[in-house]
Length: 142
Image 1 (cartoon, helix red, strand yellow):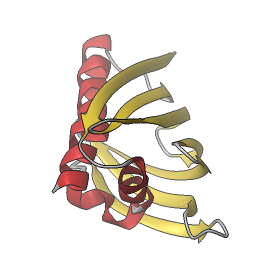
Image 2: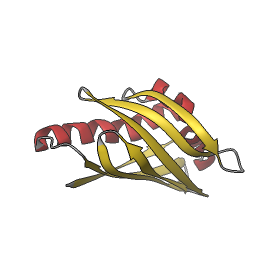
Image 3: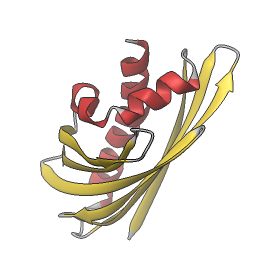
């Protein structure tokens, strides 16, 4: 069964700086404790990642993933192509410029291959949403 979650955060930096931090896939393990490794496999013509392979560990479960990124002026979407633990994953950052920086909306939907008790799914979801927002903010504003 697919599980979705979302979280928003304000970052005191322009949208371009936020997108640059998201595009630094190889640097993700430095600000996201769940990412153990992340490597870009190939890039779009503008240099941003198109596909990346990553190893993610959450609540004792390690997942090796291949994801594909689609970039727009103020958003990025990634969708899982291959995974050892998930049937499906889709995530999106939507950025809106504000007077003080950038408002970031993050949404993620996953569908696990293995049954996991609801309480653990919620705990894992909370961790992922925190990393994707607060971890990103900390990386951008340093």
